[in-house]
Length: 165
Length: 165
DNA sequence: CAGAGCATGTAAGAAGTTACATGATTGT
DNA sequence: ACAATCATGTAACTTCTTACATGCTCTG
Image 1 (spheres, rainbow over the protein chains, first blue to last red):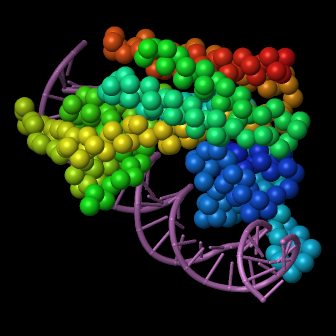
Image 2: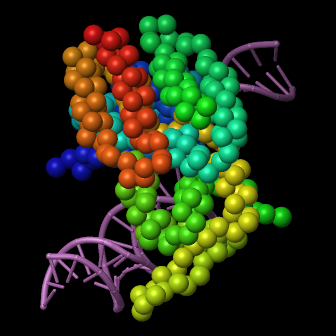
Image 3: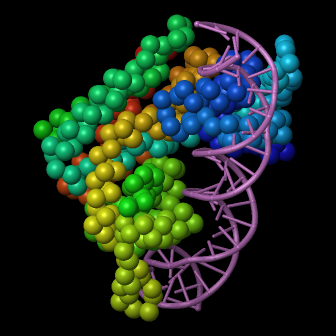
């Protein structure tokens, strides 16, 4: 009777992160989230450290003290339950097709309340922000997810600019 | 000194909703969120009723009892402060360009851990879900936001299918 | 040797969730 | 008359946020 069938997004993403990097400290996980382009993944210590406790209590990860010096360093790895849970979470097309939280989409839903020239200026500002966001990918083998996402978004925004005229 | 300069997304969206519909009850607002295709807008009473209290305390909305019968019916409208805050929130390109929370994007970031045929099956499942989500728009004047969003997403997913295939 | 970054965590509070509780009205 | 929906709200709980607190290690 595994009690932890339904992972939150933060829990699932954390399992996926550990699964990819094999082993990580809570601090490294926190930093990963902090660097993400989304404020959803705020990467606060107050979220991550208790999260790791929960995951370990659910036996999805296991930690071991691996200090090479006097500084403490607790490393987390997936258990076999954790790997199973990761696969379920990662391939969950039901959750993956949820529209999630999209600050631009939310605003577009109400943009008709604004005069067209304001709306146009707003969308062009977003495009400028996107240009600033595009950073070179560190990992060479990885296809840059952010880049592809930004491209899709730019195309979407252009259809709205066309529509407004 | 207006204390409420930085609205949360739920607060901003609620102002926008009232701004568009002119006047709404807490129940109607709650139902609006509940019907949305995103689970982010869960539309629970425990979120909306306290939210309306906060907005009224901040003088962004004002309510009046408008019962036509014995059933209570408290209707909310924007104050002038509320209309001003709405404009700031709606045209905030900084927040609008935040990547938000996207369950599919999160999974794609880790999809390389899965075998290609699994990844392909997963993406095709998401496309199927999208087809099921597409509902006819009620409001005739409104360009269907969900439809345009789904189109952009389908195009994005196809680039990933091409990449894997 | 100072400051940035690594590394751990906790405390107080905000905001949301589920579940409960109550009652009126409308449609079948 | 019965169920679904309108309409209000609260209570307990979970999770996340900001801010604090502590100490080690590396780089200039």
